[in-house]
Image (cartoon, rainbow, N blue to C red; front, side, top):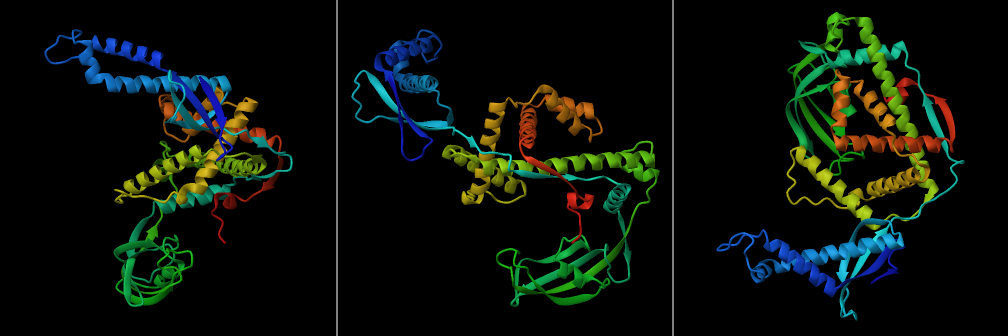
Amino acid sequence: MQQAVETKPSPLERQLKVAVPVAALEADIADRIKKLARTVKMQGFRPGKVPIKMVERHYGFQVRQEALSESVQRGFAEAVRTQNFRVAGMPRFEPVEGGTDTEAFEFQAVFEVYPEITMGDLAGRQVTRPVTEVTEKDVDATIETLRKQRAKYEPVTRGAADADLVNIDFEGKVDGAPFEGGKGENFTVVLGEGRMLPAFEAALMGLAGGETKTFPIVFPEDYVEHLKGKTAEFTVKVNQVAEPKLPVVDAEFARTLGVEDGDVARMREEIRQNIEREVKKRVQTRVKDQVMSGLIESATFEVPRVLLDSEVARMHDAAVADLKQRGMTTENMQLPADLFADRARQRVTLGLLVADIVRRNDLAARPEQVRKVIEEHAESFEQPAEMVRWFYGQPERMAEVEALVMEDNVVEWSLGRMKVEDRQMPFDELMGTKKA
């Protein structure tokens, strides 16, 4: 006997009564006990010769619980199929108190169903698609960055200048008192990289090895909570100033970038190809972000609470694991759920939207699409074929690629229904390297 009843707390919540006939349950338990008796081992008895009564005495409770649980699950699954419920998350089973059926155990399953998604008109949504051309100037700038990354520093006696590596001891105080993170020894900073506050780096300019300087720093309003807006007095001693010596762009430099024959022209072409791949990814990301935002704004539906709670828990565990990997003590760490609530809602909402559009419009990932994405990703590795084989041997990675392909299919489907405007965008703006 099953009976579905809608409940009031949430439009997605359902209650379903599941009845397990007593006679059928007892027969199932007896059958399980008999099968167990054939293999169970007890001291003083040969295998298969343990009396049924002893098996029941030792294992009866466990067997009864397993049989009852499986019967309830089967009854629930059958009722769900009969009534075409799309269950979100795991149901919660509760015994029905004061049931009137003496020939059956009654349980109530409380669960949520997936929402019916109503999508508004996408024709009014506009997407701006960047159009960026990679020039020789962009290749030159990338090579310059690669040279800086491979710079060797040589000590100098002059005052520090932009791009110099400066080794310092420093101590900062607020209202005469030290503060956490305000002291360091043999600390190195490359001036102009922006690792330190601009005012701090500016104060180091012109200082030579052995010199000491005291200066005030006002922390910005978007700094850490206990320091933002406050003024600290720093005392800095410069231990050493070193200037960068950049490698020459020659055959040896090309070989350090993986061009075995040292051909500089080949190196430039490979750099250009890498840049163009990165430009393509950046454009796709910008377009996808706009499309997904448009879909969320156009859709109307409730989000199952059980899916939100599950995503918050997953994000919490991932954050704790990340902190642990960084060396922080995470025992008994409890990060507030509110910290993840907004992002969890956005992820779940987007996941439901994408899945619904894929299902309704037959946009599942095709094998040839998955292969293409994997091969494009593998191109940036020294042995692409090995990387492709690695992907196909990793079910979790394959599932991630298939999910990305489905998202891309949804983006293409959406772009066919939205207004798309191409706009020229400079390379440095797209890459986020444009100076203010």
